[in-house]
Image (spheres, rainbow, N blue to C red):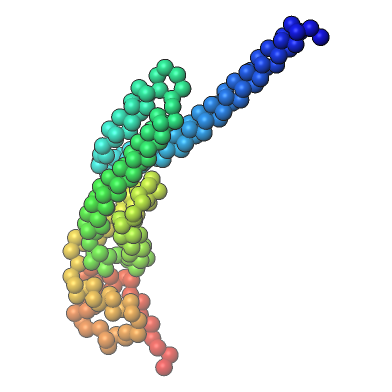
Length: 227
């Protein structure tokens, strides 16, 4: 084999090695970009989840959340991505910015939610439950308990908002035709009756008149003891 043939084979081998190295480099670069994109996409989905919650919060309560930081994070990433594939630093900055947006939105939503929901709960007069029929009274009490729990949720999402609004509407519906004010004496009397064990001799004429005044007598059953 001539010297020229050996050199040609050496050059061919060198070129092949260069192509392999470049292909490996391209594959590594592609893997890096895909991994970074997945990380940014995951952070973006968290931020978008909070965005959807903020939109629902505004629809159901009228409360608005400042979402400007998300648009700013997008613009920074877009500006730094022009002219080719972004460097790792750009992806990392974008992920960090999106994570910060998600935390900011969650905190702002939680604070706005707590104030609004607590106001709704305090606006429900549980004393008026005494004037409801027993089944409605139990339903109203259960709904109010749920409202109190949801109002103190540390993590507020769409499920929390929808459940609270549904229970709040239910309580208002139940109280729609109830007296605006219920005497403490009536509430205490109904509590005594619900405790069980009372007989007619335990009820005064004034007690019975009070029940009839607020249409509660129709929910009281009278039976005669066998002994």
